[in-house]
Image (cartoon, rainbow, N blue to C red):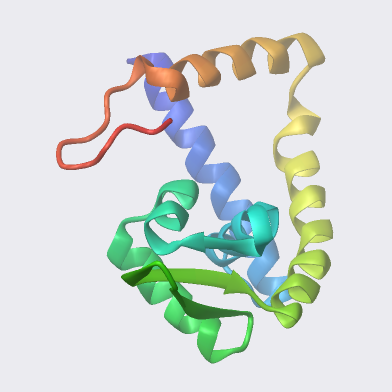
Length: 149
């Protein structure tokens, strides 16, 4: 339990610090940054809303509310899937790409300050292996959610 609790405290501290920097310097939450990054890295800069929710580890309703806010400020827009009348894609806008490029420097500086500066290379390698094991199926999907690929 000691390792688990330390992991939770570390995650909370690092994400709070990263989010604080992003809000102070970019007026962007960490979740909004993650959505913009996921869309920018996706094929054709777009994802179905369900894929986006999975990619950024938010509930479907949570990602819908976040995309609503990002759409209101012009960073993303939605389009219907031609082959599926029910499907909706979130698409990063040109303004969203610009905002992401601006925020990426803040994000990287924060990762370096709050995460990389306190670890040794061999520790990072081991930590990455452990996290990859957990992400690859060491932890079952929560009830009602499909497993992550």
